[in-house]
Length: 438
Image 1 (cartoon, rainbow, N blue to C red):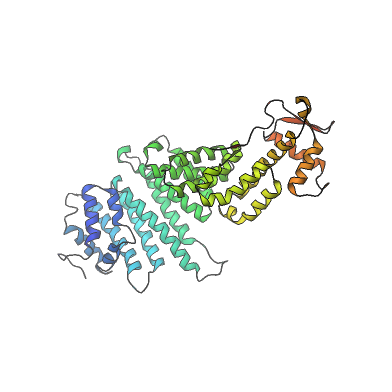
Image 2 (cartoon, rainbow, N blue to C red):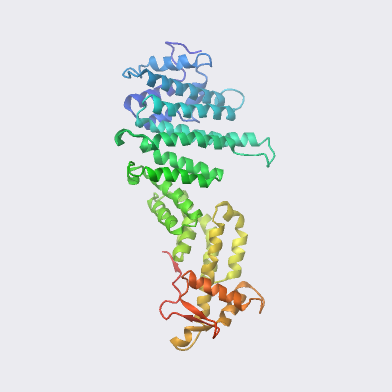
């Protein structure tokens, strides 16, 4: 058992934090609470449950780390945090195998201790990375704990209650950031977007995306008192824009989705292909619906997974082949549903129809007046052939309905003359074009 005056085996934990505290280096302080390092095992075996609070306090006092600190509450809060951290490392490092559930419970207490440190003990906003590290570790341990617990349950009984509980705790961390009223230089508001992104990540994992609305409302309500988003670290900005774009995408607000996804994509570092790929999964169908812009083959070739997903669709859309489009959609249904893009891709069938109707229009010969008046029968036959239907299977009324939808959505310009059974096209830009991006 460690005692006052001894050389602690876990000196790396104390020294890392001591250096961070004395230099007010928040990033280094966060590293002191990192999991999966060699320091964890040393720290876990440095004391026992009866002596841990005393030994942690002595570990700091013997090194004089809090020599300039006059706040007993602050010293006590750091000791409490490291006692909780010791319990986490103990659950993971001592014994025959890691006790993930016990580690999750201790990590939850650690995050709550960190929150109390900021609320009640006057921790500087320089130490926000401690909140980041401990909160993210709580998320990771919650997922591991749920996995372990669910191994002994039937599929019907399985749940993610540990992750749900972790989200509630981390929401408290978000609240102490966004609700801080200190001057902006000293404010915890600088932690708002990190905590927002962490909650978004958890809500998406839990498939409770509706809960993002509460977070977004809080962020919007505090916009006047918040620093501009461009003043926050680049990774936080890009992650926020990505999740905000996806939320809009899932709500069918494609213009807002495109705006935020484009900002996220353009802000990515050049070599961040994994992040770019995640953004493009939603950006490609968004731009296809908004502006009828197809991704180029050169762009897709940079992302093999995206190429496998979207290249069949771009070929079907260009050719106006309804049958192949439906087959491609059915073949990738499981993956599209998993990525939450199935319904949006299904809507892209309108673009396939638009290109099919344009091909039928281009088959017309004669002067401009003749070309602008196309028999409805031509479109009916085109849909039958493209869909792989037998002659006569498509009703004339169905074709009229498809044409009317094209006109209403702005993909075609003109009107249907039922009296003459013809589609009368505008003389200027009758088919606002489908383009391929560079």
